[in-house]
Image (cartoon, rainbow, N blue to C red):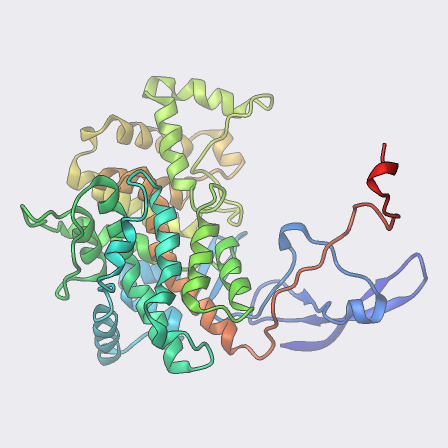
Length: 433
């Protein structure tokens, strides 16, 4: 929404002034509308990383990093995590409102009916080396879905967009589990229609033909919460990548594959894996104080992983729920079953009491707890980011659909500040020194 207010920009070189409209969203910071700035002044704005630039309008997710607030369609993440489940949150993100009983039942059934993948896709996996990273496999397989499902590629057809959206949400756990099974040389496990989304994923990951996998309800609920807490997080790197790819008119499978590629970066989706690597580096509880001394030393480049957050300057609201879930899982398993988990719990206790952590607001974040949960469940670190992709697919596809339906959306075309050589004459080879 726009108010009749403007910000004044003065060009000190020419003395000219420009009036830029001020925009107001439903909540959050005001925005300066610079869309006509170049046409009127010949100037661009400069914003590396776009951290001060609003690239779109969205009704899906709102974050207030200072206050530690995360809302999906207006609903607090803590309320959703406590009272809802992943399928209900998926419906909310994709359709805008919480479902009633009949709507949820139909939605769950529709998703369930799409969980299997085309049988020829299983042969596609054999083109990868056994030691290929599961993210590489998922990126390739998801991108290849457009070669199998030709009936849902027309982005201008709302029905085809819906079918593609359902297929992506439904098939991601199957694709991810197949990537894991392939990496360890075990046979693929087909999905079962009588299981929940989270339970189905756990079974496809861990069951073998020789013995049926018994699903622990604590683990099932933990996986469901992990999926919920990672479902969407506003215009982060991977979501922006999906939108940018989609702005060209690319098919949804290609756009989600682009999001997976972006998520793979260690600065984005690899944080929970980095937490486990940090704990391995520390090795023993007796080494914690030495490690933290290195972290506090400004001349040492040791990084503390799993604490603090780029967006949240307060406690990560997802971490509060994840912490409780983490302790539920560790209680069910017995924390003493793994020295690394004992080390993690010691790190958490210190972080919540140490003045250094408190003063810098370095609270344990969602990645700290999710990494511990994955470790406890027996999920290898190579699969951590894959699970992130499984959860985030719902957010990606919701953002993609919103972008397609936005009449203001244009193909992404960021500008640049050119700092290279200016125009110069070409010299033939024999005249070059």
